[in-house]
Image (cartoon, rainbow, N blue to C red; front, top):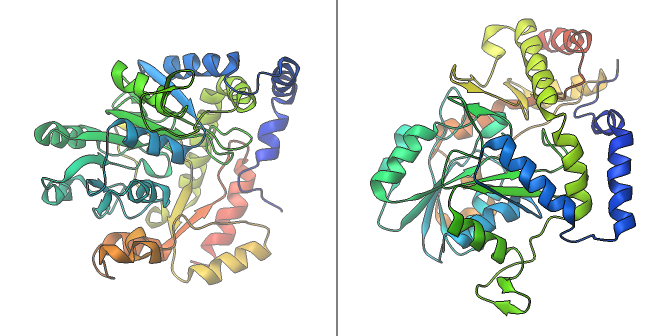
Length: 364
């Protein structure tokens, strides 16, 4: 049996006719930048999340940059985030000259440990950036309460959790600004890079829209320093079509996770999903010993795996200047040594999952 990890081919084939027509319409119109499909997508994203404002952009990474630029993050400002995530979360902070301040992760969910945040807040802290890892939202009520107490902004890095819910509310509509990614392998992915920001603050929304077109308020009139951060019309058109079917994709991903849970032993079911949360399962990750050996054997059996993420950010060479050392964030370090992602996409069958878990359990 040959298993596909993300099955992007099938994701296209399932809605090929509608997607092809949408792309053809854009090419025929030649409105490749800020065509009508961009507005259509932003309206659809607003409705989907119940956010007041949705602003598309060129990538999930640029979404984080745009959010911090709109919040006037300056060199030397501190932003609290997780050391166990894709590098973009902290990289974008450093890119603007600010300082990423890491807080260890929760032992069950692998999201930021909210009980450790307050002790890291200083007079230089300007924002908290929780990451909704693997498809599950962080503990936003506690994070927002701390932000209110210390007059901080909250930027939800929701690159992996678009469509997930927290106490009945959608990811991206839970904080000052929510940011997501439409990278092809994400639960809702386009055919290249893409992203979006969400906010209930009209002033922030207008500022983000301006910054994403080089700080323009009107053509060649620049109020802010900005970037070229627009979403291509082609990608918007693809996402408009895919969003129509996204709820069904989320249900199928959740069913795949249920199948995995049913066929794996209790200790292998990680991370834990809180009862008030739903996850979109951007990844289905477990912890194993002898990870390299297990990955190699599974590969020979036609089962692809991945590691999200093998080295926590505080130990990355690019962050050496922060002065961290091994042992500073022990939970993140331990999880990074053992975490392994299994195939996860809406098209996995129970038969395939039985095969994956049978072969896996023989190695554990």
